[in-house]
Image 1 (spheres, rainbow, N blue to C red):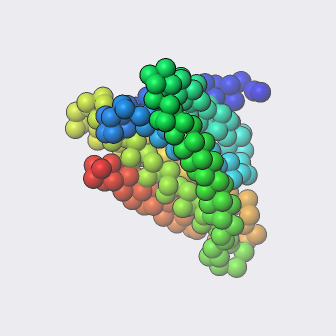
Image 2 (image 1 turned 90 degrees about the vertical axis):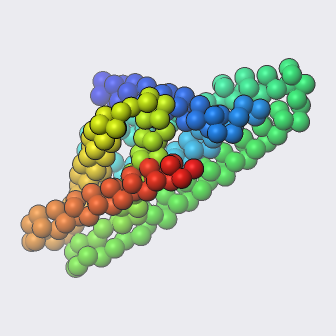
Image 3 (image 1 turned 135 degrees about the vertical axis):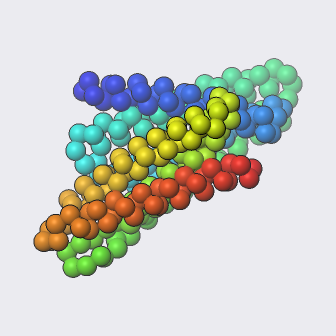
Length: 236
């Protein structure tokens, strides 16, 4: 493991742990604490994302940056975002309280739903990355990656609303952080999309016109996804 990977994993773990706390706390506030809804939610979400990312966007990393953020997301972020230890502790707590039916229910639905979520993520990731879109002869774009970018932007918008609600940010700060985060996500995902496209491109006679078009299109897709995620959270 290189130094870059170690730093990436630590950063991903820190972000994942913070988001786990915020998401689980939000779910508990929404559904109550009579059942481990928060832990169940983060484990299901994490299972789906690790299946999707392991087979989709990160299946063929391009360059050192991609090779570094693969363990940062799969090991660091998702490893810290999900939690088996809290699931075990909460199940034991239900047993000690004499709520054996709820404890058994928590075990069964956690295992079954997490397995279903990771299976769905893997299948969706494989399907998306096998869907080519021919722009013109010699130019093929796996538009499944654009869909993955849309999903990532949607998740960003959804989680941003959750985090900003807990932090009680002012409107000015919310706008600034939202624009900065969305811009950073759009930049990284757009550059990855262009690198991936250039790697499989057999005709570069059109220069940078198509890559710039792809970057602009990806930016619009990410903006729409983030807005949709934010709108869904407010609707809930």
